[in-house]
View 1 (cartoon, rainbow, N blue to C red):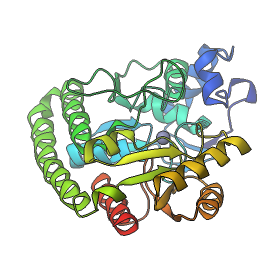
View 2: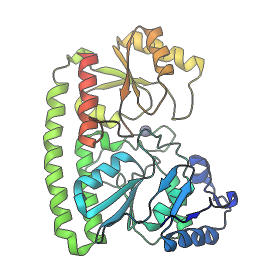
View 3: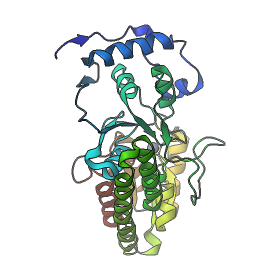
View 4: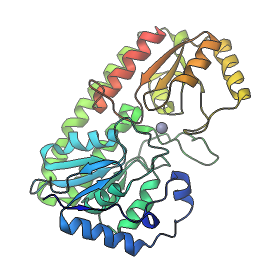
Length: 331
Ligand SMILES: [Zn+2]
């Protein structure tokens, strides 16, 4: 099957700004979008869109089709579901989740999903409008919200909550338990397998959590302070006994003022911070400037919101990669 459909009319493209999308509906005719999606899905065609070409007919019989917002969440679902799931992340590897701009092909992915998985807490609110535009009845699971046993931390704006729970491995285990239950609810015939998959993966994550603690313990207490590029690591720091002295950007997509940079440089010097950690999805230049002025080193290849190339191409690999970089830079 090689038929192609043209890009949807620009008038019914999803809005481009995540924050704008969270505030207002675009006025796009939802019915027209839903019809365009329905036509594309029913035809089983290849959709050529700006993000590339996706094959709409790759799911094996019996597989649960899951769409996640990020590659990290996609890996958690894959580890739980194995061959019983077909998982697709809307934000591609290396992409930026907070400011993501959904493409027309993303509408089709969401429309065909049996289960939609997001983090919530403001990380990926652009999904809400995408889901509404497709008119899908598939359940939408918010992995990070209302989790029992979680000590939630403040986010960037007044009254917001920091969304980066998964970087505390114990909280990622809570995500995994919720994923197992969500898959079991969508595919009751495979419920036992999904719950077993979740339990087996949780056991591995418990071991990983212990490994992280043992590794961080090798860093002298007085060196356990750092700067991160955006505010992705407060749950990680709280869990493993590290101290965040500051962040480079007030929020993803917002550059700091000259005064904020000067304050950060002063804070780095005052606290004797050895390293500034920048993340793979951001340009390292700003972090390099701050570190140079403060006399600190830069680690520019941390992974937080997105997976990377092997060995950081799984959640477990991401955690090991990051922790090894923390130990190397701070010990
Ligand atoms: Zn983030």
